[in-house]
Every structure is written in C-alpha cells, then in structure tokens.
Amino acid sequence: MKYSESLKKNRDFQQVYRHGTSLSNRYLVMYVLKNQYNRNRLGISVSKKVGNSVVRHRVTRLIRESYRLNEIIFHTGLDIVVIARPSAKDRSYREIESALLHLAGKHHIAGEGNEKISD
Image (cartoon, rainbow, N blue to C red; front, side, top):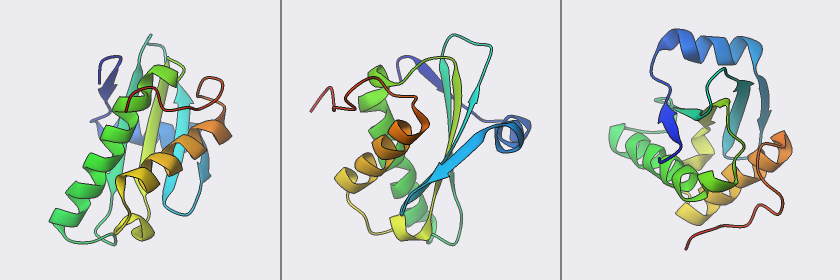
C-alpha cells in the first residue's frame, strides 16, 4: 500500500465505528471517517463467523489486495474499516474487488468512473 497504512489500534477502530459512516452490500461493510493525515489508513476485520483462520486470512488478503491495486482512485485523508461478512467466505478476488469498489462508490470516496487502474 503505497499511499496508505494499516489501522492497528483498537481505539482507532472504535473511533471509526463511533463517528464514521457505514454502508454495506452482500459481502462487505465499510466504515469511513476523515482523519487529520494526508494518507488513508485501512483496517480489515474478519470475524470467526466467516471461517477458520485459513479462510479468514484469505479473505483479508483479498480485501487488502483489492484496495492496494485500486488505491490510486480513493480520496486521501480517510480512515477506512472494511468488515467481511460470512457470505464473503467462498468468493473470488473479482467479487471481493467489485464489492469493495461498489462501497467506495456509495461512500463517494473513489474517483470518477471507479475503473480498475492496473490489471
């Protein structure tokens, strides 16, 4: 993630949950809150309801990679928390990426067009 870093501290996640706006679709829930930095911070949460550790880590990697390849179209200065729903368990990379970009578009935090920049 060239322009972003990870949200790691529980208090940062809690602040986004409390003060951010949330939207969801079939596979993901996204919370967004403006921050005081000039970069985005991405947090990913995948609960045990999604599956065992292998499945959870796979979903986490899919979300992180989807964001990384498309982060150029995201606005900067945001804390973004993405929560995987149990239905995301058996989804392909394309489906997770599509769900992430769909939520970014609903939040109006992605550039015009929402096209994938790299392939």
